[in-house]
Image (cartoon, rainbow over all chains, first blue to last red; front, side):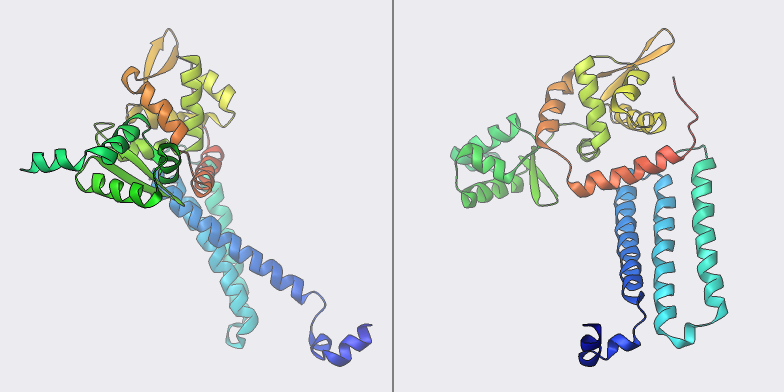
Amino acid sequence: MLTILKIFFPLIHQTEPFEGVENLVALGIGILSILLLALSITAYRKTRLQLTIYAIIIFSIFAIQQFIDFLDDILIALDMPITDVIISSLTLAILILFFLVIVRTKIT
Amino acid sequence: MGGCLELVEIEGTAEKLLYFIRDNPGCHLRKIRREMGISMGTVQYQLDKLEKIGKVTSTRRGFYKYYFPVGLFKDNEKDILEVLTHETARKILMFILEQKNPTQTDIVNNVKISARSISWHVGRLIALKIISEIRDGRYKRYQLQEDDAKYILILLRNYYPSIWDKWSMRVVEMFLSLSSSTEME
């Protein structure tokens, strides 16, 4: 069956077996981070709570990180070691922000 | 001249609509149409007219447009209405209505979200003068402002949050819960 499919759809030969799943997961992360970003913006507009600014920044970084990762896959110019450093730095920034949310005490 | 025009404008159907909105603040267009048995076109036309002459005000949330009599709350009208769409604030208000004057610990135990989150919501409700705080020994108790209790109850029934409102407030609550708690009674 797979052989027949490969004859009619030669692209199957060129595609990594998990590439489709990887793309779907990446798409899911992108959509969810944008949804959470929109929710945090709404939350800020409703409450004017400074804590929600952290949420906006965190979910923005998630979305940016996913966008850079996506560009890294499709643009050869971005396929450099520095791109991985940037992506890792963004993960670090997200964790630092979560840490700051946990340790801060003043809520305004 | 303006007064005459106003009297003419709010006769008949418009007058009935105005009384209905006064009795049911925060009701939405479809509900008004359903309960008054008037065609959608007539309801929309008359409500637009009432809005133009400043008798009612409206606000859109998701798919619904909600109507209020002008001057329902004297100050911070928009803020009060905004707060009433917060799921947790509604739960707190319902609990206070039910228990009359619970302590903050009672509210935390009943609403079952973090003390920090409850404290923040209660603070907002006090600031907007929807509830007031009374000292009872070492406890703080909360009660609804007597004059507004009836309206708050009607608004809670009519003016409910959209799914988007609920979700956005859950983001706030998640971050409030993550943040360290410093104050309790």
